Image (cartoon, rainbow, N blue to C red):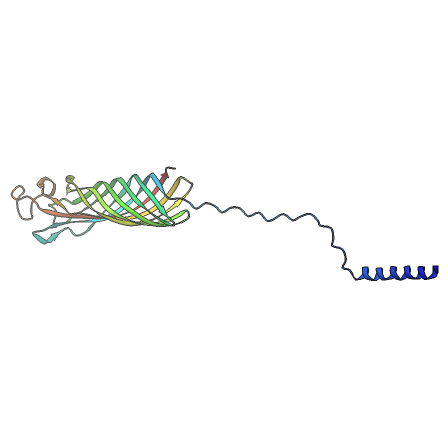
Length: 246
């Protein structure tokens, strides 16, 4: 009887070992957890909106022409009027998605000057055109690629125009229009720099003072006042620094 019990126990033990050999090996103990890779938060998109103030400086290069409207053949022909310009600006921007729009005013002192000797001018003199200041009031519309702004601009212009001969001038203030384009980049959150081109077309100036423009050709001085029409337009390339109020 004992032998039968012992045989049964050995059979059960052998069966249990067979079942254990069929089970999968135990899973390894968990090791240290690998930290997730750090993903920095996205940088905020630059905001171009707000009030700003700045200063620009550059160079103007234009043309002028003295014409007698009674005798269109009597004229100096175009001559260059060039010089440095510089002055303050103020404006405001609004932004909707990538589109930036607003208004800007500027006032530049000007050293633009040009002269030409011509049979049209009094004997021994040169006809001369110069401008001592130019101001504009313009709308701006552009598209911002984060910290870089591409824009176009257009509006009205007002400028001093002085015309004459031999250092004697007749000065007036003339209105006109202006248009251009520019590129502006943010250097810091509050400071930007820009490069801008503007074309300025002013209304014609009439020179009617004999002491400034002499008399009509062939007539003695004082017998007939001049009636010269003086045309003046200019292009300006300007660099500017702008401070944005936050």
